Length: 506
Image (cartoon, rainbow, N blue to C red; front, side):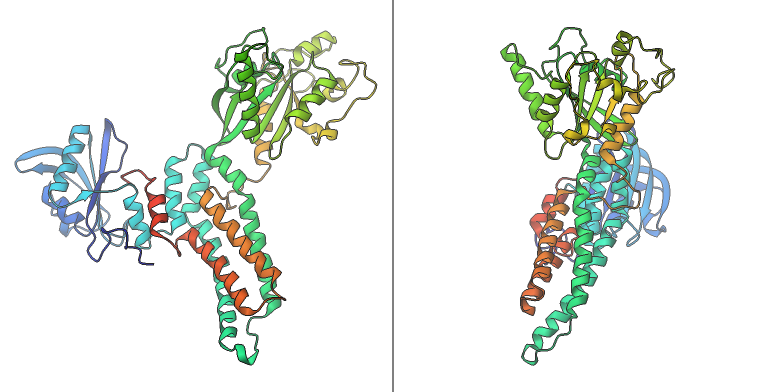
């Protein structure tokens, strides 16, 4: 493809572009970026200080920006001479005072002297077109800028450094080798020779399908890290859901009342645990609604549950029966939803049973006696006649939930809240977050990998039954989809879609 066909600014003499690289608004410093063959020359025309055209790359120079006899500002000018720059073009960055008027005046002056306003993402687009970054790395730039947690920052940085690209390039290189051998077979079809060893191709294809399958499965965690884990707090009215939300956030975010049905609509807040954002959603209590407004609230609760990645089911341990617990678990479980069981109001239950545990809190919200994890043998307590006289007591495993998924707490007394936070984290991540592991966070990459996997499965299925030309066709398709991720194969529409989402100065 001619990468420049839909981008008239990228011809043999590309234009020099300019944009504000820092956020708009008043601040201490604003940085104006120029990129292009005339970047240094244009900057030199308006700079009073050293002759910028005679200076070395990666140097900083103090001076003034002038418009004729008018001094606009006192600035520092950073020079990056091609190809040692972000875009592999001449790049100038002007650090001026962060006045909106000063910034606008300098940009207008630079445009008057031969630059033009940059389009969204145009600096990074030039970096891609000039071979500084591949397409997945360019997308990682946007992800890094948008990262709002330690985990999302680390995943984007790992992709920007080329971890994902290197892995794909290794897979693609191996496939290219076999594709070339199969193409050679087609040239000698009449002689019935076999250049590509079928067993080696089978083993290689199996290995690549395994790697791609792992990448595809990583999207669940990668997407959660990038956008946050949708975590719904649900349960019956007056189970303490809003109190739990407040305890997790350590602030009075939701209205709390002893009256059931206080929460009529969803309340959403973000909680960061170990570098991962969890989007906590407090919901209306699940019951037969008593009025139209509550009915809407319950409907929204069920909608949020169906969209959640993690469901924290909260129940009142002092009131609920085994039958009610069973009904709730069966009604709330759904495909792709991880469920945690939280037994709330344990302070009331233990007091009513005459337990010796104290409700005073230590630092971190743990119990001072009796242990923080089991409240003095909670598992036996919960499934005993304390709740019900029913003869048979179901086990959590009957509902696909291990006993380890149940945690006793007191949201009001803030007991076991730190343990709950850790359990929320481990339930969502489950040891899958590794600094060296590649995680897929981009839906475009996921779709390309899924198409690659489908093509390679066709290769495996047809290894012994189809001719070389059909094998070659499927391998070419796999190579095509892998190439789409890194930009070896691109279309103008694809580039426009990706880079139009960037900020102007990037």
